[in-house]
Amino acid sequence: MTPLDKAHAAMQAAKGDDTARLRFYECLADAELFVLLGREATGDDISPELFEVDEGRFVLGFDLEERLVQFTGRAAPYAAISGRVLVQMLDGQGIGLGVNLEVAQSSILIPADAVGWLNRTLGQTPDRVEARIAGISAPSGLPEALIGALEAKLASAAGLAEAAYLVGVSYAGGGVGHLLGFVGADARAQGPLAKAAGEALTFTGIEAAAMDVGFFDVGDPVTSRLVSQGLRFDIPLPAPKEARPRPAPGSDPDKPPILR
Image (cartoon, rainbow, N blue to C red; front, side, top):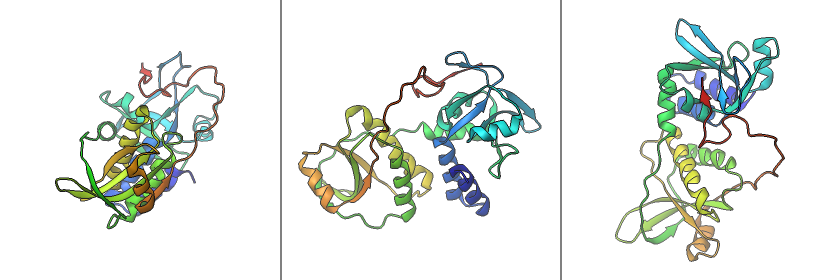
């Protein structure tokens, strides 16, 4: 079973559980989907095959190439696109997303309004504030579901930081809470890391939970306190770069493919 299969099975087993539903949508956003095209892609110009059913118009995506081939029964053009880029493309088009149709237990039709909701949720960005840390302690009282969500999210942040530490924190002038401190992240990685941490919180569905995010250099005086008091999350090293003749459509989130 793929991660998407498992998330879908958990959602089906706990119908009415918002947390399971949110985790499925998070998994969908993080997945690479093989999207069936009507014709071969030309650069970033792609034409997904559209299927019309009683529920509306849908683009089809599969989380394995083999599943796409199983559905079509023939060689067919496709584009590999992340779930988050795909919903960004489809939002506002009145087009839904069919996932693994007829080829897996995770077969599901996601209507256009749900596609729009997911894109808006993924588009949320954390507020930026400045505060001076007065005290750091071991974290306490956070749900295990959030810890697991952070582990899963940061496992996909290869090379963006050396490590992250979750701690309890108090601020000068008042205020206490929890802080996820990233160590060794350069300026370009800070936005994506803060967004990833925010998504872990959002898709866990824990409305009462709150968490700040901070960035620290290896030699920062606060870093030694994070290491001694915090719950450590290891971040994988970046994968070796491989020569690629051209980027796949959707591989650059700042240049999503053009939907025709």
